[in-house]
Amino acid sequence: MKTKFVKSLFVTAILANGLTMATSAFAIDITGAGATFPYPIYAKWAESYNVKTGVKLNYQSIGSGGGIKQITNKTVDFGASDKPLKPEELDKAGLMQFPAVVGGVVPVVNVPGVTDGEMRLSGEVLANIFLKKITRWNDPAIVALNPSVKLPDTAITVVHRSDGSGTSFVFTNYLSKVSKEWADKVGADTSVAWPAGVGGKGNEGVASYAQRIKGSIGYVEYAFAKQNNLPTATLQNREGEFVKPSIESFQSAAKYAEWEKAPGFYEILTNEPGKASWPITGASFILMHKVQDNPANGAEVLKFFDWSYTNGSLMAKALDYVPMPDSVVKLIQTSWKNNLKSKDGTAVWTK
Image (cartoon, rainbow, N blue to C red; front, top):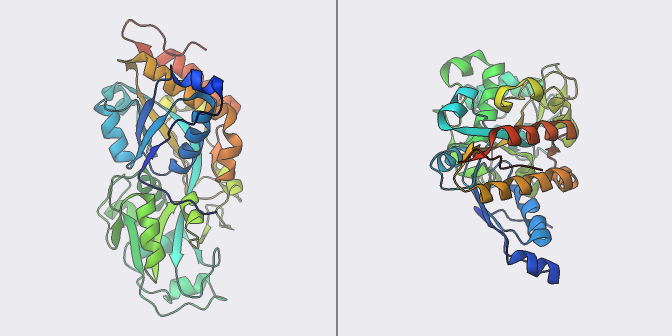
């Protein structure tokens, strides 16, 4: 059954039994805001965690830029961003970050007669479409990649994010790696000066436009493509292989992450090696203040993600996210102990 995503998540208390009722009386609710990329799995985790503990999560799916702003201003317990902050940025803001899940950003197409996975694109052709150098679906460059597909003489409408977006960062970071012209003219960031197209707010906004506009192409996190039945394109990866988006192709890219060597867990997973690797793979990150003004709330955030790492892997895989390996979870928990303190210097995470 399809689930319609909404802009804000608020999980109400479900009192399954007397124990849950007793627990909920003492539960501390937690707040977060940011990336729309991981929203589907955060919603699923929050629902299950609420049933188990009585703790409610109020997560505002407003985009990575908004999440960074809200955690910087201390209006939420945690922020979420698909663009990792560099170590110097974290230090300046007094923040630490850790990865929650890995997923894929996928091009979605609405081309009459073209089914899911049927359209083949290379990185260069994808960049040229978004640069407005390729403007029709029967352009020779697209036809050359799709000799057996009947492509219509239809104008291409580019759909992109209108808000500050980590999904946009992952997508434009990839385009910058495969197209020098894109890197020189547009670059990679949460917000860029798009050469063409219409903007939608959030992954859900882009999905909605792509669903309605004939001849369109956009980019969304994979779960949003599946939930909205949007055809995805097959992409040529770094090894020259054409691959489809899937948890297996995201895992293939994710295995090249060197989390133990990444200061502040700063790691970008686009255009990774591997014949089976999806080229637009990325992690989603949680941001928290190193000095916790409200350590009880900070501890509850950590309990939520600790529970999610331990109990949420199957839920993540069901939505085609790659859960963090146990070895990485141990690194994350060590970073909690070392970096998150109350004002008196006491560690927030003591497990």
